[in-house]
Image 1: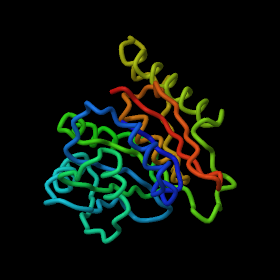
Image 2: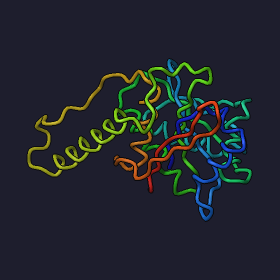
Image 3: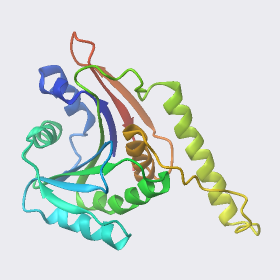
Image 4: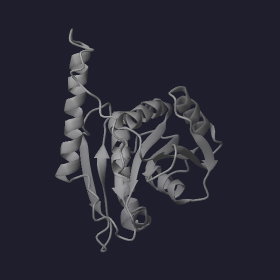
Length: 227
């Protein structure tokens, strides 16, 4: 499972294509690809069907509904993610979908969505949490994956999860020693990272990578979870 941060337009060049191919092991069998993205606003998550018969999209819709998330399935006329998936696995996937998250839910909800998606991994689906940067360069407040802010935040999440696990096995459980954070998450990056953290087994990523893509200082960076 991958978390990628990049200007997706930069991935269409030769260096971007080469970097993408390096992220997926040659021996990894991939049937379909599911992208998890986020954008500000929106009332609820939305599944965009990029290509294929729609079986994967409907399966995810059903799984999310069982966990209390009402999600619509819509078609998408944007070829970008389909081409991105083909570049990564070097063949045409059976199906490509995008789960577009809305901002404003609590972090626990994004992690619950991660639990909805994780079952797809065992069914030959490559899961990619894609944090798309603004191609116009309006990313002044954006934190790259290698920034200490993001890395320390994920370590904090991991420590909190260890505490939750420890208390669940303790005679003190239910005593209110740990309070969950129900504050709404406003940043699209943190929405995606919470989902990726859940997909990664509520642990810090085992891999940090970064590639320079062109002379315009555009880059591809991210995390890998060896799940």
